[in-house]
Image: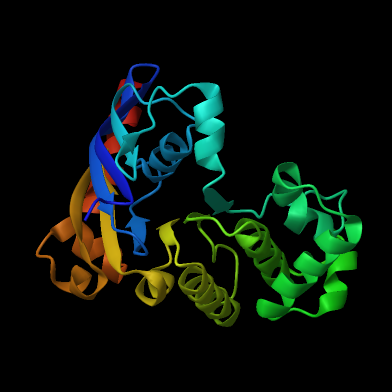
Length: 264
C-alpha cells in the first residue's frame, strides 16, 4: 500500500541553526498520527514544510506517491485543496460571522449562494454539537471551546482527504478538550481522512492517535503504535509521555541554559 503521506530525510536550517536534521515519517491512508516533542524540537516546522509554507533544504514530501517539494505554485495550490487544517489559536476571521468563516475556503472553490453556504455551515455546526443559530454570531462572541469547534467545522467543510491539527486542545479545560478530541475522531472517521496532529497534551494523544512519533533535536527518535508509547525503553520518550520532572529532556534544557550563561 502506498503511504498517504511520506516524509523522507527532511532537513531545514534557519540562520545556520539546524531545526530539522533528517525527519522521516509515513502515514497510511485513514490513519491518525500524532507528533509529540518539546517546544522547539521541529514539530511545527515539519507541518509547515508539509503545507508548503516553508521550503525544506533537503528531503522529499510525498502525497500519494507524488513529491510535492519544488512544485509549481499552481500544482501546490491544487494539492492544498486536499488539506484541511485547524490552527492552535483558531485563526478565525474576527470580522466575519461564523457561517462565512466556515465556508470561506469552500466558496473560493465552488460558486454558491448565500443561502447554500449558510445551510452547509448550519449542518456542520449541528454535527459538531453547536446550535444552528451560532452561524450568525461572530468569533468574539464564542467561548474558546466553541471557537475550536468552528475552526474544526471550517477545516472539514470541503471534505478534505488530509486533516492537520495544531495543538487542537491547547488552552481548553480537560472536559472540553475531551469533547474536541471526540469530534476530531468522529470527523476523521466520517470523512475517511488521514490526520496529522501536533500535541503536547498526552491525554489528547491517547484519545486520537493510531500512531505516535516523537521528534527530538530535529529527528524522529521513536515512531510506533500509540498503545506502545508507554514502553519504548527510550528515556526521552518515557519522560515526555509520563510528564516526569527529571530526565534527559530536563537535563538538556538545563545544559542549554548553562551554555548560554557561560557564553554571555
